[in-house]
Each structure stands twice: as structure tokens, then as C-alpha cells.
Length: 421
Ligand code: ATP
Ligand code: MG
Image (cartoon, rainbow, N blue to C red; front, side):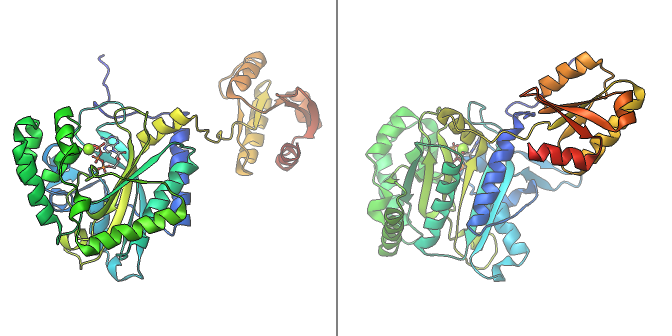
């Protein structure tokens, strides 16, 4: 029979490889909690229109990368390509806008984008993201950046660079856009085909095109930071003040524009050079217009999302250690059928008491059981035969030191012996 393969651009993540994922998700939740964020879970699929309105018609995500499907009644849905639009929808739909401000939520989700799979870029991928609503000042921008920075460093990732930019607001962006389009028109012949199309629809996107001749043109393009209105300038200066005072290093990077239409003012990325072509581990920014765009009352927002696979690549590059998952504390090796039954009872009791314990259910010989216990990395082995059942005592062998200690065949007695040495 022909074997079925997983869809292109997806991953099977199988133990023990899941340990690093669990560690990252747990660290994310811990750090987010310390920063005052609670978890939010939203559906994996949403009405397609949510992403048209919430991500932006002119973005690559909406134009090229969406997984859409019709259900049996002809309604059109999309697998979420990102988390922000769903979070904003959920905040509005569940009346959370009237909760005490700021609202702070984080999520660990899978996302779907029809892209060309390569290292650090897949079709189903995983994000840790966080969003904050209701705080318009630069203190909120700083808090989000600080959360991302703390998390990345807590994972043991070093050499991370923070790039920030301001892309202005509806007051100052039109004039900037005009200046940019004028400049790009003068250089249109040199642009790639995609950017020629972007010129009309989403000219800011040309600035972060990876195509060589486009990036040469982008390097000399007018910069958003030189076209900010006074309010946007003050906002950026205030954020710089927070960052300077905190010791988080950063650089102003005029090429960061973010792919999504709803961003206003602050945009930022964390980059880990050297992990490959996809070195942006985190992208984020302010999106003060999004709540209204999705039918809520106007409310400022700011958020970020990080790609977990890229974080893992960065951790590997830095030699970051993850705590070893607890292994088998005790392996019980029975000899014969009555002993097997007895072993099952002891192991069940130990498991209920919180001990990671195991016993033979394969009918292996004692020799094979000892080999298997060794493969499992079991810290201790308890051999039980007829005489042990009769005396109610057995020898507990420490596999590292080979030291043997006599112990009563009773869950509590075994636990106390294990925890005391
Ligand atoms: P890129 O420029 O790399 O395509 P993006 O601007 O599309 O990124 P965002 O939508 O801001 O990315 O997503 C936030 C983060 O999610 C990215 O910085 C990246 O770490 C991760 N990410 C985005 N798309 C993918 C993907 N297809 N596979 C793996 N990770 C991804
Ligand atoms: Mg992308």
C-alpha cells in the first residue's frame, strides 16, 4: 500500500523533540503572566472577511498566502494566517472593550500561510503572540518590546538585535506615501514585478522587498521617520527615552514597514543574525486603527508575534540549554506472573503519588528488562520475584552508583527513599 505523506510545508513534531516546544510555550506563558497578560484562545478558522478587513487587502498574506475553504453551506472561511485579527474580533464580540484597561492577552497558536517552504518558513507554523489594547502612549510600546526582549533572552538567545521604526499615522502617512511613490516612479524600471504592482497598492512594502535591485532603490528612498507629524515624532522620541533608560539596545531601521496594513507609528522586529535567510524572530507594532476597522469602538492597540521554529533555530545557534524533562525515576522489573501483577500495583501507586515509574508489559526476560531500563535512562530499578512478595522487602538499585538499598514494598516507603537520596 502506498504511504500517505504530510502536506508540504507542515511538520510532525514528535517526542523527545516536543520538549523544546513545551519549554518555549511554558516560558512564554510564564513571562507573559509576569507582564500582566492572560491567555486568549480563538478559533483556528474564521470568516474570510475578517482577514480581508483585519490584515489588509493589499498584503501578501491576503493576496497570495491564505488557505480558504467553503463549508457545506457555502460560507467562506480561512485558516488563520496570524493571530491579531482574531484577537481583536474576540475582544469586540465578547464585550471586553469595557473591561479595565489596558487589555492584555497572549497566545500560542498555529497559523497557516500558503508560502514557498524553506528553512524558517513553513505553511503551518507556530507563533507566540501578545496584544495590548487601550494604551496609546509610548509606555505601552516599551512594555511590549520589553516583554518580547525578556522572553527571547530567557530562552538563552544571545546576539539579538532590536530594529524599530515609525511609519506615521493617518495624518502624516499620505504625504509620505506621495513622496515615496514619486521617488519609486522615477526608479520604476529597476523594480521587480511584484514591487511594480505594489507601487500603486502598497508602496511601503517595496521598502522591505528582499530583491537586490529593489533593496538598492529602497536604500535611497525617502524615510518615514523624516516625514512624521509632531505627535508621531514625540511618540517615537518618548519610546526611545524608555528604551535608553532600560538598557535594551536598538537601532532605527527605516526599512521596517511590516507587511500588514493596519500598523501605525511604532513598528519593530527582533532579528537574530546568522540563523539563515529568515532571521526575523519577532515582528510587531502599533495598530491604532484596527479596532475600529473591525467594527469596535476606537481603541489603540499594539502587539507582536514570534515564529517558534525561528526561535528554536536561534536557540540551537546559541547553544541554549533546555531543562531536561524528568526521566523515569523507577523501573520495576518483575520475575514471573505473580510478580508482574504485584509490580503493576506498586507502579500504579507510585504514579498516583507523582512518581514517573514504569514496569514491564512486554513479557521481557530479566536481562532484557535491565537493558530496556538502561535505555529509558531509569534512575533506579526494583527487582521483584516470589521471595520479595513474600517478605514484602526488595532491593532498590541506583543505576548511576550501583548502590543497593533494601526497601519495603509500599508506595509511600519507596517515595520517601527516592526523595531522600
Ligand atoms: P516574513 O517577512 O518573514 O515573511 P512576516 O512579516 O510575514 O514575516 P509576521 O506576519 O509579522 O511575519 O509574523 C510574525 C512572525 O511569525 C515572523 O517574524 C516570523 O518569525 C513568523 N513567521 C511568519 N511567517 C512564517 C512562516 N511562513 N513560517 C514560519 N514562521 C513564520
Ligand atoms: Mg511573510
